Length: 100
Image (cartoon, rainbow, N blue to C red):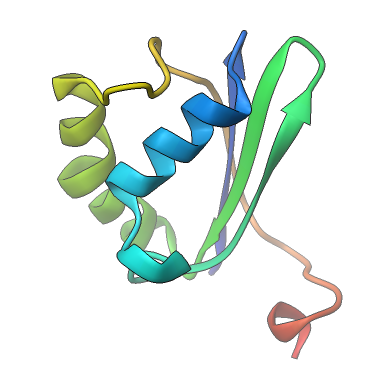
């Protein structure tokens, strides 16, 4: 079952997002293995990222093997504090490649 993650970084900015995404995603705009969707943008009070993974396990592998180790070392110009996180099992997807 697909698994969704919403990260909100209070006070986060576009430049912090760009530095952070460059550090944890593959070069050239590709998505990490198991991630099928990524959207991000400014939101009330900061920056929000929504990611869909093909399973909870692929999210946990990315989180534990790439995201958290990289963020805990610090990313020059990146987000300076952990996000507020909401996770959910995806029950329904409409549109785009995900809706096929």
